[in-house]
Image 1 (tube, rainbow, N blue to C red):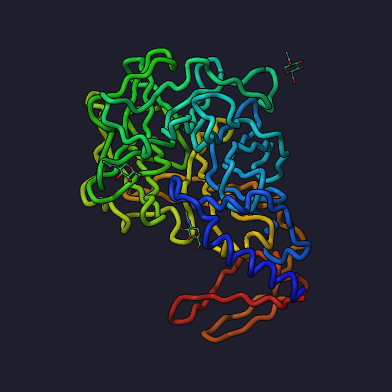
Image 2: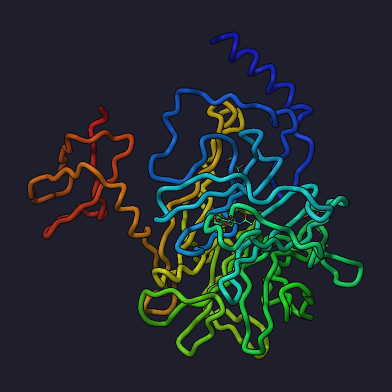
Length: 428
Ligand SMILES: *[C@@H]1O[C@H](CO)[C@@H](O)[C@H](O)[C@H]1NC(C)=O
Ligand SMILES: *[C@@H]1O[C@H](CO)[C@@H](O)[C@H](O)[C@H]1NC(C)=O
Ligand SMILES: *[C@@H]1O[C@H](CO)[C@@H](O)[C@H](O)[C@H]1NC(C)=O
């Protein structure tokens, strides 16, 4: 064992000097670690409730959708190691958002327009229940461009094979359009305006100004950049993984992304590359001007409203028409060191999907884990009623702490002054 660690140390000493070759989209490229497959059998940190593949690196959730009653989760994945690199769109499907079937990667480098990488993107369900995926490809000149892929066989509910448009890339930076070739990525789900034109936004920046670049199309194939972005904010740096969707001003139901009805507000979320925090605002989308205006008082920076104040990034929602809800996915970077990631053989999980809706105040969103998560509850343990006072300790026996989730149902709870309730479970 000691020898193993010594050689690992030497190995790291070597690669830290020479192996980290460049910075791409804020991920280090650890060239020497792209073959490591060492998955430790001792896995105390693997999750029981969250989505994660058996091994290797994962990051952003991509192209989340429901099709013919089946949920699809694609995600950024390195088939060759526990560090970022060789990114493909891995693919899993589920009937309940909890139990997942893995499929072969759906999108991987195969065209000029994505030969150096298949990065994040989103799904749109076109009329006639036809899914389409937009994703960012890295072309031979390392430019970031936007590509389209559609299912090969619409009768296959698992949508296992995807065909890329021969017209790719459909959106690319050129000498005319002033788009930064290395800051142009993460297309959103598209929406249809009242003028029957599709719209999509792509994250970008000009100097330190974050941008949601807007494109429009009549046929989903030919896209024209609008003169102005949907929205922009000075001083925020690169906007990654924008998400733009309508919310109902009453009730908990979600809305289809193209829904512009009278009782709707809009939400714009961006992931800040500089700080690795996300923020969102609630506001108004003017279809006439094709601009988004956040409500007065909105904080448009790193200190704005977040979905999650822990490690949570590159989030993305979709409209689940089967249950009339909007569902949020997000990547959790468990922030262990590269050294530890290689040792454990994996890195990153997807947070439990959450239902999302607008609070009655209209000022912020409310979220709750999808109801299906309750399926994972087994062996309920009940503790007899007891008046809790500050400093009270209740021992809950009969559960193992490694996967315990606690739920307090009580008619009378006396919280301590700081309004904290602690539940201790004995580790067995
Ligand atoms: C399309 O998918 C359906 C359902 O899985 C299958 O029965 C059919 O053979 C597939 N068609 C082709 C051309 O692969
Ligand atoms: C374009 O993006 C790259 C990568 O983030 C950055 O180094 C460069 O400064 C950007 N150029 C402008 C004009 O924003
Ligand atoms: C992931 O965690 C690592 C280690 O803490 C950190 O350097 C990196 O910025 C994190 N990335 C995100 C997107 O949170």
